[in-house]
Length: 112
Length: 116
Image (cartoon, rainbow over all chains, first blue to last red; front, side, top):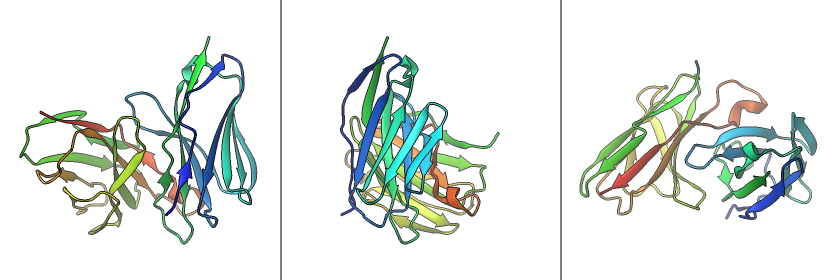
């Protein structure tokens, strides 16, 4: 059974702080990892993809991947109230399937 | 403007009725997907299609049906056999160009279905 685990939260951080969101996965051979942001009542929006071990930065967002420990994280620097949303982690299994397994998401609240 | 469109945005159904949700994409993506999301829950895969005229059941296909007659379109029918259809339905697509980003999924705006 492929599993992707996220803490449901809510994770509450003050404006300007770093928000750290974590995700662990069970399928050791997974190759592709994604973070989506979902505002209440809206559809998920892809914000980061990562395929190799290490860090990948895009603006205020940094995705971190550690395949040996089977976790992927998302850091949001200088958090803003507009970052308040649910963040979904998605992991593609090995073997060429393009059917990701989604975590249930972590709710982030950034308070002024 | 490239993207995925879903219609209608809101849909109300009486018990015993079949309804069809539309999903269209102009991203030239090969694969399309239907998910269901219930409040506080993750995304659950209903059906997916990786090529025209072919589709596969996902984790919760019972009570649903799909077709993929055109690359751009992947409509979902919620039949009267689906016992608890009230949910947020999301269509996604992936696989536009070869390379690392080939399996990135992009979502439409969703259809919120309510059974009266």
